[in-house]
Image (cartoon, rainbow, N blue to C red):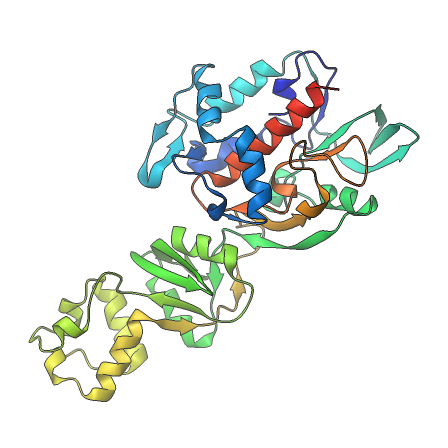
Length: 364
């Protein structure tokens, strides 16, 4: 995105992969969730004032106009998510056209960055390159098979930047022994609400071989550090209104029968009509509205959509994305300590921060 805005500048793009935008190509099942109808700082983990300042200059409406001018009209799916109409390649092709005047080095790994006097020196495996300005858009640690690495964080650290703790995000949870029964439900999906601290996420939970995944879990992982989470397996459903029912619990509860039977077995409750439940059993059943447990961990960077944490926004100028510590050094996208929920928010952040950076570079 940065290079696509710099028609009058001499640009060198360095990419560790054998094609540009490799992560874009595979994202969203090959359709790329470009952005969302509603984009607010509340959709992000990070400094909301910093995020808001960036979006003032380039938000989802600006992005949609920009790609529409280049003949890509994305389609809206559930929850206001915009996807490429045919495939991610449509978006990548736009960037290829917009950067055709630039020099692009593929299969090239950056080892380090240094600065002497007014010039930066980009040290690669076979050669070094000299530049007056450098934009670090190296992404996070997720998807190591696509060349993801910590080079951006190492560069920032070498110039004295503060690195906020990084971790896999938008990723599934592994479970401890008490929740191993979740694994026997692998492949079943259901709508739930998950509370992590003061954050409530809603959507589909998917039981998996390693634990739990699905959109609602991925969103919850953005806010989880350690300790317990709380799952409401029965959102928008009142147990009190059905306590005198003659139906079996497994027929009454609005969840998949296999899940219901597994939860009842876990809670040591017989599958009987609710009017037969003792007070103790009713209290146990009520915990399905606020089922608490501590995940053992997560599925790791190889399964994570993004990396949370990164370069502190306190040390980056939101009006330019330039380092406050080093003139001419810019950071954009996932390498910065701003991480969005599932739904196109991370691509929007990447595009918006890149646009702000590019406009600053144009003025040089």
